[in-house]
Length: 273
Ligand code: ARG
Image (cartoon, rainbow, N blue to C red; front, side, top):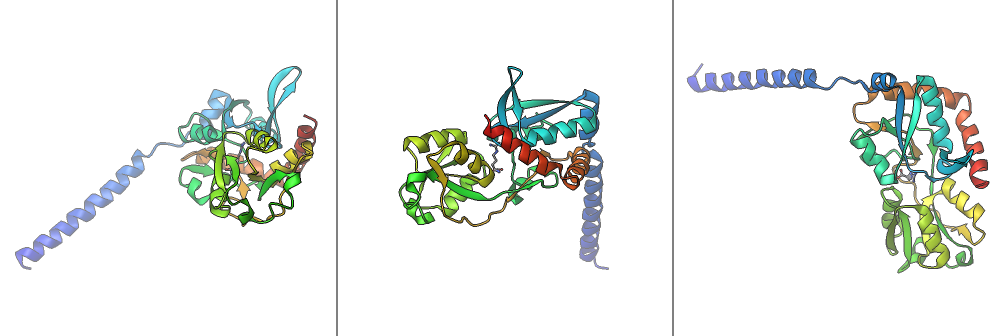
């Protein structure tokens, strides 16, 4: 073997050895997953939510006290019960739900969160528990004006900040002028007041607003299905043990038809608000 060949072979061997060493080092230095035992030791499940999204989460008075109710709240109570711990809700804006989970301020976030390929890079997601689709809420008097996505050309249309509806709005109604609002209820006020012409939101939420506001309706426009048509709970990256435990609970609740019950109950409760 020439000196040169020997040298090349030597370098290849050195590189291979150090790569293997690196790989095993990073494996052993990976943080241990204490997501489930942390919650059990603490005795409290810390859950971030944005209670502006009936029937999934909304504020309500219970015995004169401000509390949160809805499908996601019922689901979380069941998870707390099964884990044998109390539940503490952090009520924040939707973008802060995702942010609190990302930095580990909450054990998980639940807020009708759509699972997308992009979000999967930053969060652990449980099994999905609800299917959603996007619609445009408009004034009833405009039902014959806004009949296609292009009919919104030059008009202001809103979506909630941090939600995938922002993307639906700019991708599918590109000729509208997009407005991002912290809460859909602000959009509803602006729509009723004439400052904007439409709001992109998911049909389960839109139906609630339409049933309590005589002057609003859902436009006869079919939006294309997007990445993110089902809801799941979002956990910090690496919270596998807690996610797996929650999955067993979600699977059981689905099998028992409990999620459908939560939907029915929350629809009734949020309408009587
Ligand atoms: N499903 C949408 C998303 O994940 C909207 C969720 C908004 N949730 C809320 N509680 N406001 O982007």
